[in-house]
Length: 188
Image (cartoon, rainbow, N blue to C red; front, side, top):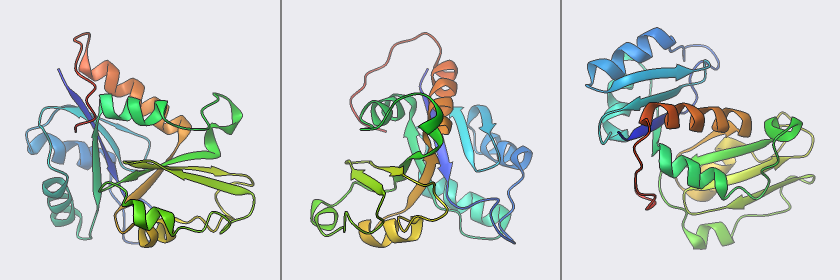
C-alpha cells in the first residue's frame, strides 16, 4: 500500500488560520483518503489512498476553513529520498535547527543560481529538485532565510518542517504503507 504525506502551509499560526486536527482528519476521510493521521498542530497529514491531488486538497481545505491553504504532497518513498539527500543529517540536538522546505514545484536552476548564499550570515541553504535544505546557525527566529523569501526566490510554494518532524513523518508514512515494497522512482 502506498502512503502519502500532505504538508499544509501556514496553518495554526496567527489569527484566523486555525485548523483543528480532528476536523482536518475528517475532511481528508470525506475526500476518500484512508488511514488518516495527523502529527502535531502544524498541518502534517499522513494517509493512504490516492494518488492525491494537492490542488484538490487545497481547494477543499480553503472551502472548509475559509482561507487559502497551500498544500504540498509527497509519497512516503519520496519523503525518504528527500531526507536521504539532506546535506546536514546528523540525528541529535541539531534536528530542530535543520529544516526541509518542501517545494510545490521543481526548483528552476536559473532562479536557484540567483539566490544569495550570504543573505543570512551563520545560516546556510542547499536547493535540491524538490526541497530546499536549511541550517539555521542561531535558530529560525533571527534568520533572513524566511519562508516568504524562499517562495519569492523559487517562485513556488515552500512549506518548512524541522528535521525531527520530517523524520517522524517518514516513520509514520512507512508504518502506514505496511510491509509491501514499492518503487523509489521519484514520482509522487
